[in-house]
Length: 609
Image 1 (cartoon, one colour):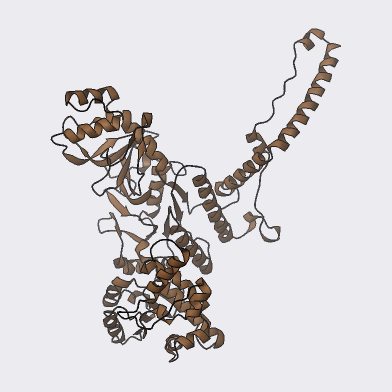
Image 2 (image 1 turned 45 degrees about the horizontal axis):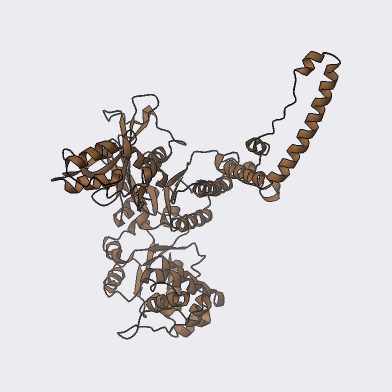
């Protein structure tokens, strides 16, 4: 299942209901004490109640109630559920979905007691009419009675079938969103929850306020699991050892009894040697492990940034081990402030890894951060800006409107060396410009190498939202000179270019002469990368397809499966070919030197600032 939203009510600073949208990658940004960590900890309580457990003090001090509500909404739901006696049903058939077809699970904690316990509800568009509102709570004999009273098919088998028949025959269902108790419920409502629990994602939380030692659970658990697996593999050898030990022990015990007979024959007759071999768990406990890094230096003696980076890796490994050892199909990685103690270069590597992880099937990643550098490397649609309004109530914003507030909250610029903001449409463009500049730089060092130059930072502007970035000048708070290049395939982009050039603040903008950046690829680069041959045109017409379209068809054909790749997937895959572009290939595809002039213009702007 995939987490879509989380709603909090009366939990810590969240007095009133706060609903937050969750994506494949979700990053909470904001000043201290606005409730970023509280969101992740609320999810830990919802899924595990382990690393962070609900406490009486978690109820909002001004809420006027001791009830804390944590509600999660899910998509990608199980297609069927199997109840007792093999009776199959679906969430839709049981009216357990919201009006949007999602599953909303709410856990309510009474924080007036010392150890609050969750009561679980499904919030669903469920029948509320008299006589049909409580069918999930009825036993089989009670459902059979209703079937007879309504003159329905008495041969119906299984509770789900009888419920469907009763609901279908009802004059009115009066559907409305109501809470259906499933933890303290009766009959099938409880059974359904028992099944749903196995489908919930694994939630793995890595907190920021930790000592980062190799004795931490994230380190020791995978190592202990490895030891247990190794012991299982050498079970035969261990059995031989135990047999030899048993033989020697019984021999010694026998000799002891013989000696005892000479002292007290009656006592000796009452004793019998017995041997109890150790359990596998005790064998595992015999082994312990730490981590030694380069030159044998213990991990605990390395810098805090190195320790934390290693522990993040172990945290991921432990979470994946848990996923592998269950029947669950999805996992949510939640990491507080991954930038803590990390050099900016490590931050970039880490965020690239987390971005890649979020794109894996069944994976979601949630972060909190105070780092402008880390936030700038993340997709804008992943940002959730948390703040307090004038009354002190927490609020959340998302979308392109958050750029200005996020820049103010985190600071103006992540790296003082940055002189130029290189603005493009999306991530695949960033790959293209880095590779092209690097190839030209190798033959002419006077050309800026965007793949390594910290004086240039890329800003993906997001295609259809470009007009907002330009018209509202969202990048102004960064106080850096802007350099914009957009593909010619969208005519409206010319208006954006004209606006930027008219500012008079040193910003520069242009459209590509060719249709799009992929039109600058050399066929040999595509062949080297994918062993695919396509004909590239500068400007597709009615009888010519775009480069991504041609590649998407050829890629699917070569692999012999499925429909052609979509435009976005084709561009993402095709971006790998840019690493095969040499200076010679660039100049062959661009004899007028347009590409080279872009990068020389960037160099000129750097020199002026």
